[in-house]
Image: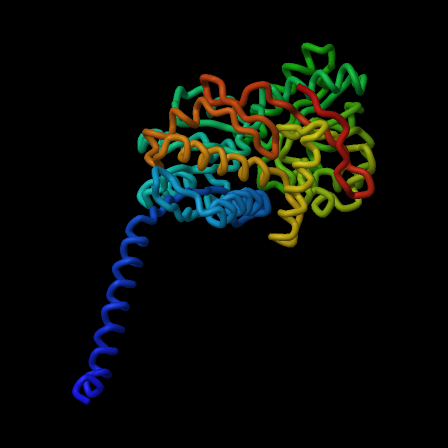
Length: 388
């Protein structure tokens, strides 16, 4: 009878003991879990916010997959966290964002999107020793600074401009071309490289005009160009400017082809250009390119992306996704998320991603980079060729 009378006390004691043991186990498991912060920076507001959201979604997709896999680094279970910041596509804001990310103790950075933001921000990441991979910045100056922590997973403007100039002369047989750029680090750099290549391939540059990356009225420069009767207009800039420019070209009766780089190769271009987007008038090139069996890998990624975000890839999401996974894989191989330990592993990586094989040269540029040429038909982007 005495034993029975103590039963509630013993049950309570047992429950307390079990609860205490569970707390210890949970506490130990929690202590063994490591949080790894990966930063992202790009324009999340403004007229090219769709491009910044594109890269942000690419990073988030990779991080979500990594967390679902239950990845461990150095024997510790890892939870990856993204810290994403809006640089507004403005150089000064980009440096403030970079410092905020450094202060937030990110262990790697995917970004920025624009060359004009990537270059000034890169010094801050360099000084802090944080590896930086841009999924989209193409100005050669970015990797010519000598920073051992700066990388890109796309071709640079020298490669892009060279291919476009050669294609314009040798394939399109263009003779007279006008060049316009938006005076940004990206736009001016790309236009300069195209101009050099075009001239080297025998093309006559009939006009060189300038605008800004915020402009909406191009009537003055387009009227001046129309008088020169060019076969094509090459534009160094982004879709938010290139789209309205195409609209105004049609209004002025300019039938020249419209050429540009990845900035005007987005899924948003048909919306921005409206009736100005005539079939086969636009020729644009995008860094990277997939061929043969790799096409299915890319299409599978695009399908998964659409399901996850109920929207199409704009341009850079696959490159941001690959850059994030490349960084995570380097951490795994190094057995550490410490930038000083995984950076050398990342620099010498040979990573097979959805965009193809990624391998860096001594400067941090991607080796043997491909370029894909596109046009637009029926308001849809159509691939023409992959060139190297």
